[in-house]
Image (cartoon, rainbow, N blue to C red; front, top):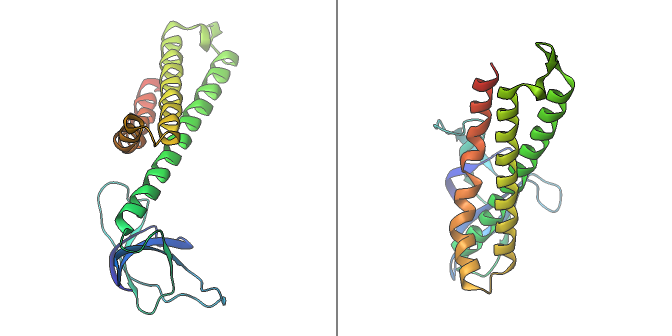
Length: 188
């Protein structure tokens, strides 16, 4: 398959890659191990130095003679990989909403059982504000995630298809990730 300038998460056991096929750019599933148990020739050339999500490694990779299965139709690789990325982004929305819900439940439980200044934390006005903000943001994330599920389930409807196409990428990278920083500052 050749040289890949950018491979996300090179520690994984399988990769979706785009490569030229006779019918045009196509999507392939490239496993780390071949079906016979031998290592697939995936050689990491170097890790990328990047800004942003540095905890998720990215690398330049050489794939000379690598084995892979075609995913989707030949020549429709970009369309195939975009559909799969949309599902991955939706998975991120589910995980974020679930994490927020669990964090909110734990914060409320903790505040209901911890005493400070002669009363439960949950009875303190400022803590009530923080807990209310957490609950509202958690409900909003859950509602958005469920709305996107509906849109993804009704792709035959043009409005739902367009909504999922536009909203899923923005919702999976939205303000959910910024919330813990705000909370840390408020709780100090």
